[in-house]
Image (cartoon, rainbow, N blue to C red; front, side, top):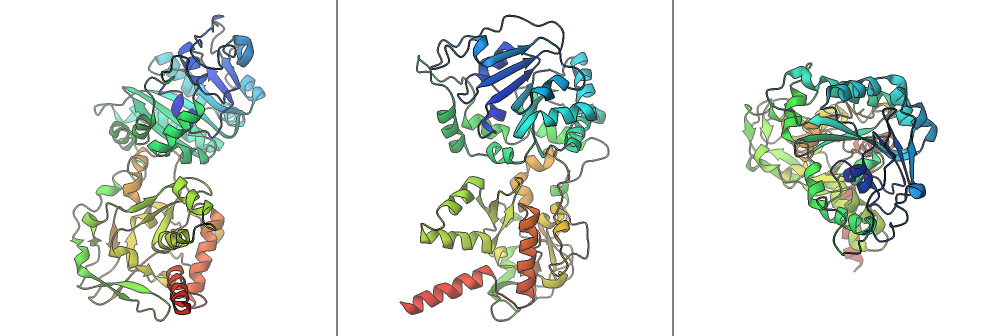
Length: 472
């Protein structure tokens, strides 16, 4: 169940599934999904069992379809090193690679297949647009494992990324490790569904049984919630590799720095002038390199992808939705691991009133700007281009995935000495990153605001509300 269902539920509507290496127990789980209309099994050796009969007697509507001739096709010809048979079939929604690398020969086979450019490209081309491949990655790593023990996984992920795969997630069940590698980042939206959303999907998509018992014995929304956060052992092993992967330990970088509590800040009208709204001001002198409110920024307001879709759906129907959107977009920032899809965070305290520092005049830096890492030190809203859209560092980042929410509000740090009474300015450039087009559009909005050609969303919203009240 742990090998099959997380990926199938991360696809919006899986129909065609390939199983490499076979396995009746894997097949038994795949047929529990009502949407599956075709399953193909590819052997890895010339030996292939003729017995693929599985017990579907309790599955409503599956009794006949579990016949091998109905939805199952077995390829007796073993896969070649370049997956040519697989790519000829094409357009699979999910490919399950049922090969356990805990066995030395299997590990060598996986390394040969998934670090070969031709093989990996064939694998990529055999998937539908939203398709994904599921890999077994052996046993859960141990602290005493040598640094190079994880190197083979990095090689595989690097090859998959070069072929065009957009996302990868890592998870464990008991002592076994799996990875779902996605052709499109859209799968991550479903991967991070809430417990309730997944329970609803299970209700809609899993076959009913004549006995009335659940077809799934162990997998449910709470189980999936556990899979969404990589095990700490993966983080430790990944960060022990050489050279040390980017972001590893980044949350520890502020431990020995002076932290300024939020009680040392004031909120009043911005020094930027009329139409600029509220601003955040230092009430005491701040030293360069100090962090701000570390103990008070751990509980942000968070609206996930599906919540944002609800806002969009009811935008024109419920007037109050507009106020919610103005709050989220005006005071928060967009976080996106999914192309053209957005989730949002809002600071739960006075930090939300810090304004954008026009022309690079910001005097604090936030973790968000660092993790999105602009390649140009001189980048501002005045010279930003669509090509400045922040690039993903890697599809395989267990440290970031384990601390996903924390990384968004990890820390703020002063870039210079700040005198009492000075306004605090941060960098808004990377507050919209769901696509290069939206990123550039937002930089142009900031440019017009900085040049006095328009006002921000909050000021615009409050001006309209004031006007509406005056009319009443």
